[in-house]
Image 1 (tube, helix red, strand yellow):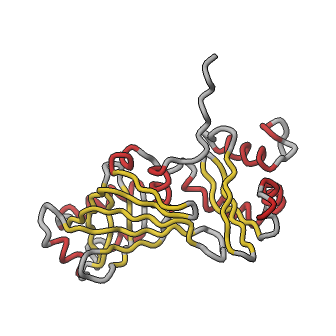
Image 2 (cartoon, rainbow, N blue to C red):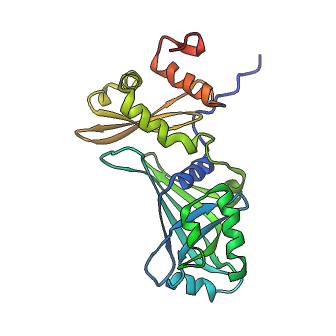
Image 3 (cartoon, helix red, strand yellow):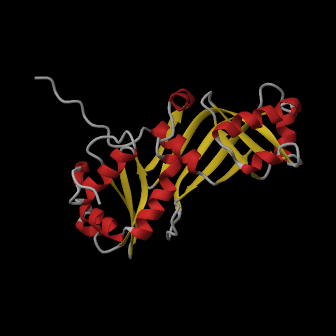
Amino acid sequence: MPRPTPTTVAPSTAERVRSACAHAQHAVLAMPGIDTTPISVHHVRQCGDAVIAVPTASVAAVLAGNSGDSGAPAVLELTDHAPLPLREPVRALVWLRGWVRAVPAQAQRALAGEVAKENPHPGLLDIGHGATLLRLVIGSAVVADSTGAESVSSDELRLAQPDPFSAMESAWLQHMDTDHADVVAQLARHLPPSLQRGIVHPLAIDRYGLTLRVEGFDGDHDFRLPFSAPADDIEALGRAVRTLAGCPFLNGLRRI
């Protein structure tokens, strides 16, 4: 008999990078020989570059403008914070390494409009009014979290998508943490005995599973609970969480 295909229990490294970039609220651009530059808008496009907004008067904007078609070496650092007031709020760090290039002045507004279709960030309204767009052509990416650090190529990144539930993840986690302590307590039953005494919060959720953050006396610990199968839609995601929690209305047989 053929062996059953193993169920994927976690996103790929490229998917983790894309999701962390989508969640990140803080980003800075590092270039050789200058201080880091704050980024007001960042957006990773499917074509394999990142569009970023920097102050027009910044040294980074000047260097990119003088770098020609080849661009200037740079690293974009993004920080993904948990949407909950945790003791250690950083969930992941991402470093996108590549070459930063200027965007012609006449193309700035058009590019801002393209970015706004996928990421309607209010900072895009500042383009041409104190902020300017640059393109970072990504050569490689590294993501680091409590499990360690992993790298991914630009080709893998182009083929990946953020988790399909990334846009609503923050609201889900906040709702679960604030209004469903009973569900979190049920999920915590899956923790190993060494982690049972800490304060438990839901840290992350994606189509493959849910991660708990345990704040203990000996530090913080993250523990992942995989779903039995990837969730394809909101209903399946809720059902998967209820299954892990051992609720009595499993698999949609009973509704509250």
